[in-house]
Image (tube, rainbow, N blue to C red):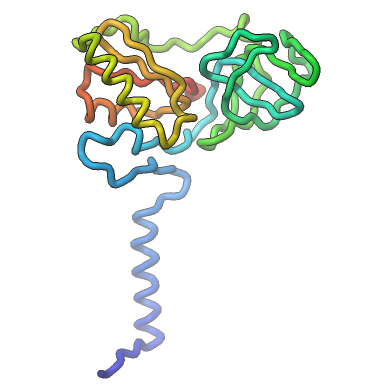
Length: 216
C-alpha cells in the first residue's frame, strides 16, 4: 500500500485549517457550561453552568476554623460555635471587620461577601459588609409565583432533585415546596440550571435560586 506524503506547504495549510476550526469552536474568556450525554428529560444535575464572567456577591456565615475559611450559603446548625459547610474562601482578612464571634480557634460572623467565583472557591475582591447593614440588590420574589403541582408531585420532585445532584451535592443548598412550586437553592446559576429544570419538568414546576449573584 502506498503512503501519502505531504509537502511542507500542504502540511502548513492543513495546520492552519485545524487552527481555524479550533478558534471557531473555543472562545477564550467565555466559559461553556459543563454538559453530559444525559438522555432527554435528565438535563438538570448533569448540565452545570460555567463560572461567572464578573464578580459575584453572596450572603451567609463566614466560618474560620484555624485559618480554613468558608462561606456558608445554606443552613447553619444553631450550636456554639455554629456548624455549617460552605464554599472555600481565599483572601479573607479579619482586620477591620466587625461583628464576629470567636471560641478557641473558631471565628465566625454573617456578611455579604464580594469576590471572584471560579466554580469551586470564592476569592475576596472587596471589603465584606456586615449582613445587618447590607442593602441587598432587588431580586424576583419567588413567593409571588404560583405553580400547579400537588403536594405529592412536589415531594416526588424534591426526591428527584436530590438524586439529580448526588454527583455534585455541594452545589445544592436545599429545596422547599411553596405555592405549587419547588424552590431549589443552589450555589450558582446563570440560567443554565433553570432552563434545564424547565426542559425536564415544565416551566411552572421548579424555581432555581442562585445564592451567588453577579454584581451589577
